[in-house]
Image 1 (tube, rainbow, N blue to C red):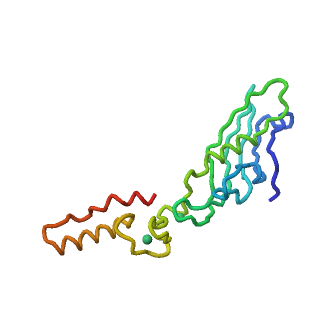
Image 2: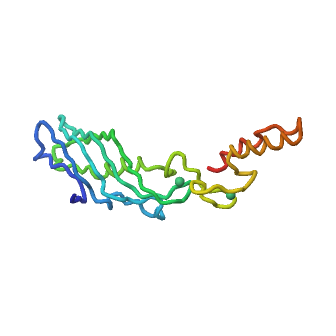
Image 3: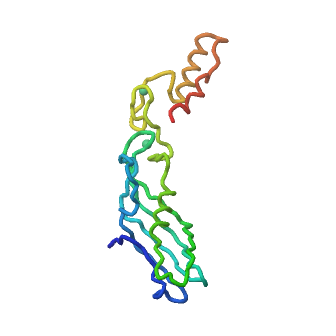
Length: 181
Ligand SMILES: [Zn+2]
Ligand SMILES: [Zn+2]
């Protein structure tokens, strides 16, 4: 699909009943500045909006979406995801002298607001072991007890309890799970 640098509505050419506009803007419109590769556009900014003139305003409703390339904030692996704004709604005041309305800045902002603050490759991403750096999605490690997965910590506690009857309670390390984030 051919992409456009901007999306502007020419009021003189807009049908009275309104119009549906669909297409794709250049990924360059996102202009994120220096993100050090953590979040980059991986495609154009797709829009699908209905544009309607109501007296002295232009009402725009629809959706915007973009494929982005990110680095997972837990495991540091690159991955791609799609960000979407399904409830894009903007109204622009129309003066007598208004000829064009540029929707580009608001479409850009909608995508930026939809970007994840801490991209995660998947909900269940195990991240990196804070001690040895092992990617816990691919392998497990023997680091213990701090930063260990809560399940292993509980097992460690069980072993201790079996050795010394009436000794340590199990699961004393259960609270360390959050340290992974
Ligand atoms: Zn991850
Ligand atoms: Zn480890």
